[in-house]
Length: 102
Image (tube, rainbow, N blue to C red; front, side, top):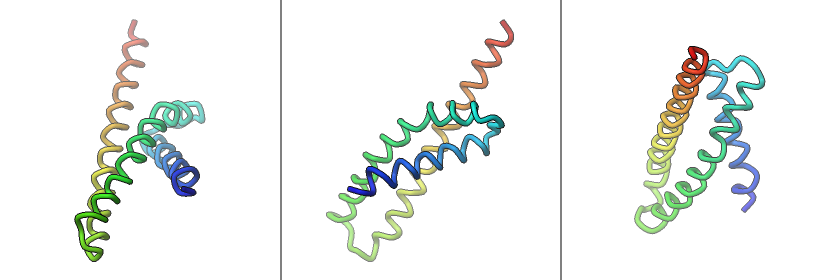
């Protein structure tokens, strides 16, 4: 229980913050906006998918395959988070540019 209430939100916060900085957020306001936009969807997705992956592993995989299984799941989730975040960032830039042009 400690993991889901304390560690996971911190992990998601750090992930979203670093992604914002890597994507070019230069001010604290830009980082805050990125965290505000992406934190809850990433947290919800991770909170649902992680227990499902564990449930699948416990019921259908022998223990010696758990490490590769969770590596594959982590890779897939990380890629999904990055794609979702990148699309949101591109949409925000397009909207900002459109707003600036009008």
